[in-house]
Length: 276
Image 1 (cartoon, rainbow, N blue to C red):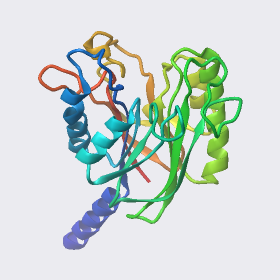
Image 2: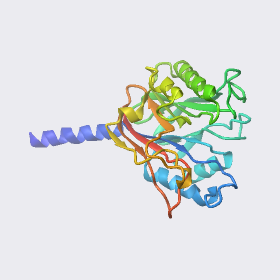
Image 3: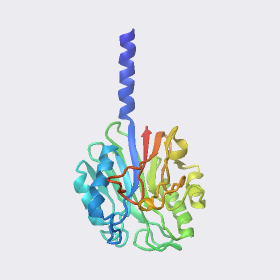
Image 4: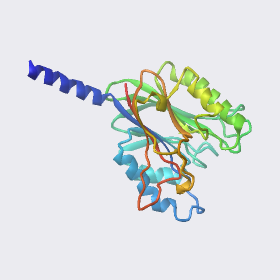
């Protein structure tokens, strides 16, 4: 009887592990000569080392220029990515790319739309935004269980108050259209904390829920933005992960990894462990 019980317990543990999904969002900070002491060439290995060590299965990045995205692709050979540049719909400008493990997921379909009240299929600025903003999405099939889900990744405007709220509404509208009943994971640098109206547009939508609120285990040592160590606050999340059912959140963490006293980015990645 004890042998049978142990066998059942082992099978259950294996099944549980097979359904587990490590998800993250990471603003990697754009490549710029202004970041003296924090240049991309010096920190890019730290960025990808962090990703590999924490075993991200699928994650969204923000502020990635094409050479940064290709650097990451080279250093992460087990991953593929989707995403285009927001300035021209090709390679120019920031990518809100989605990286995923090739042996775990099959890409079913994907696309990008602009956060705008105008034409969402072409590069343009929406509402009162200072810059063009995009949302990259992909429908993925999990090879471990055969299930499909949609993953959306975005970066809201840092200036436009109206743009942030309207962008939240647009993403929820597009999620309904694109998901077609599939479970949804939404990641991004939303440039809004958990007390903001645009945040509530998402968190109280009845469609998606903040993974932070759902997590029984929370690791929140400080804010998600660090400003190279100069902008750390006690409790302020502007990078978020939202999910729908049937995903269950096991734990949530703001990963404060550093290297030689330096930060891989001016944002900390946000990590959640999900189970189907």
